Length: 340
Image 1: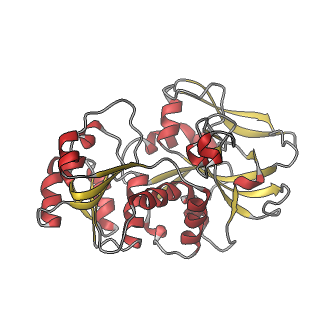
Image 2 (image 1 turned 120 degrees about the vertical axis):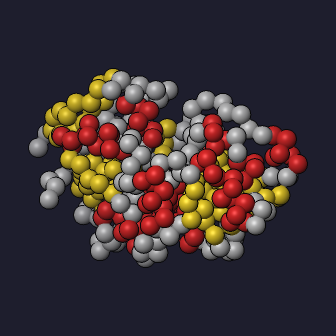
């Protein structure tokens, strides 16, 4: 076999299912047979031509679950199921040389800056592959990459047992962040979300919920008027940015997880008067991906209750429509393998 099926982004709002050559596998790399690719907000930006780095034609996809077809030196063996840390870093800039390659000054990702996984196969360096035990439910393994984002955000927050937490946004990252916060021992977790189906989903997972219009009243009720110990912004919306300081208690922590597309107004006076800590959270470290896999293998979060929906490669346009609808599906996956 010399070719494979792939989804090729050819320009704004244009996707084509094509047969393209199998990936070149550079010396020392591995070839992975793709099982699932998760769709996320970055992919939406690429689809609409709004991502600053993505250039057509491109095979998108960086939330990768697959099986090693051709192993690379020092990596998982043939037939091993893997999750992927899809980051590409330079190794020479200040962050890279000081133990922080995930915030490399030249950070790139597979599926954005190099061919990704909306295809039958993807070539990757073996050090990007995280092995997963064979008996772990594969649809849960497919959540490893966004779960690593949530784990990293919780680490940046310094979550401790007994914290009262507010999560703005009940998309995939918000739901997973709420699950991680609860697993870390948060006493109370409130999820704020404007979409009724997504609020219902968060409630079904056992979280207190509030519509955006009643967010601060709900925070006050939850915390006795004190404010939350930790506030996660998983929405990246200007309306959320405006109320983050008001949702937090004095000496609380605000974690910016969602990616803002443009500058947004923030109440700096309240940040100062409350002496709040505001921290950013960008993607994840390798250890966060490994931790995500470990939690999935242990069934520590009950991810089987998180609704996912799977589409085949020919249905990729429908998959994007469902993923962007803010409905009751947390994660949309695309599979090049036969479904059913």
